[in-house]
Image (cartoon, rainbow, N blue to C red; front, side):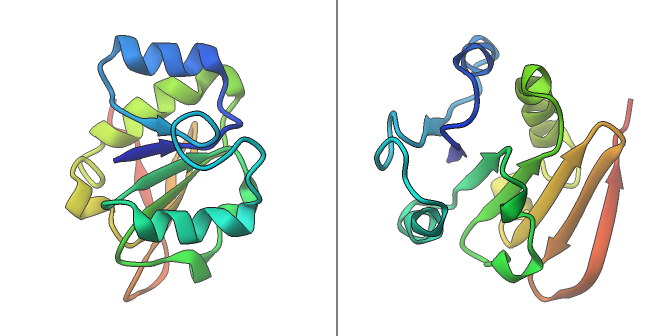
Length: 129
């Protein structure tokens, strides 16, 4: 299940719908509008293998790695969020739910930095063009 933070623009959500990328959004489909960040991790534990996408850099912490979910910090412009969500979901390193579980990632135009639960160190995955 793809979960979008409420800070992702409606225009980007429409692009994801047009590309047939399923998602639920905080404040619209899940939880309440204005949910505090500290309430989102417990919510992720209640959902079936969620991949949570956010623009909030506070979520890019190795301590958030957990085998039950993935957290993806989109360190890209608001206008490019949908494009990079799609690129991330298609990347060979992250293209299945099983591959994504246990990671905390930072998506940038240059590639993806990520931690994986049970593996030491920050890793890098480059975009394949």
